[in-house]
Length: 415
Image (cartoon, rainbow, N blue to C red; front, side, top):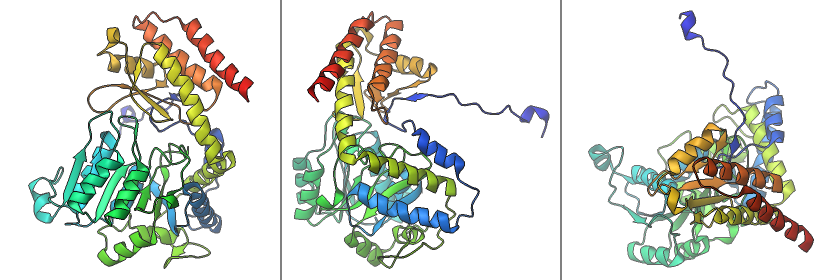
């Protein structure tokens, strides 16, 4: 190695994360992460923290599922764990209405494909046992769509994303669950973007056997910590009967490290993989903050502040096509159409992290994860308006701020 291979220390600036996620991690979570002692990964305090996280996750999910825990990694790790019960040749109906449910559907095709199907195209296999229902961009999956597909195909498994951030659409969870019950399918739900944002309890959805979320959106932890998952007894029974080709992401083996053995809670977990004391401390604090805030209150606050942002963005001439409460997906005014990527890149250059959609048509995505204050929404609105003006939008920012102030003042007066 020469001196030219030794680079300066990496200094990453603060960024206002105003996209679909990850969002800005709470400072209290970062403090717990940074202040954690250098502990052995099997230290009794680390294991106790994991057990306590397990119980807090059950409260957050709204479930009595014993197999509720965190999978080390990002949301994709949790999803891979959930999909690990899908075996080659299993019949599956998957609904795709955006980038991420589309990747989920690809994962399912990879899991369900036979050796012969994988050999033909291992990176994009066509699994004969999997039916993917493609919903046009900007539309939600409805209960009627799910009912029709499950009635026709009678699959072992059915999959849907609850909230699809690729297009900003909320899909019909109740309709999905009801159809799974009616047609005896085991439902699997991608709750990456809805857990900790919408007020729901998973035990109310009897047709869903497996749930997977992520640490860095509604839970507001660091991206590389633990992805929450929860599985019903029925899911575990099927997994035991059919097996899985995964060790690291095997739900039963993962659960043992969280103090879940043979379907029972035990005092502390046993070794499965090397867990991080730092990550455990961060997740533990994030869950404490979420539960102290209250899921119902947080869900109401997302609705309230998203409405403020939506009104301001619409007043700028944009067309909002999403219905999520943590994310706006929008088209720019007609005279700026086609300049979405230019606008996004200009904002990112100013450490204002908005996002484009990752598939066609290209739209702009502005999120409010962990930005549930008037000052935070005002900053997002102003930074977006300034960026638009730099591209020639000629917006009256004072009027936009006056309207935003009126919205919040009226809300305070109504309380």
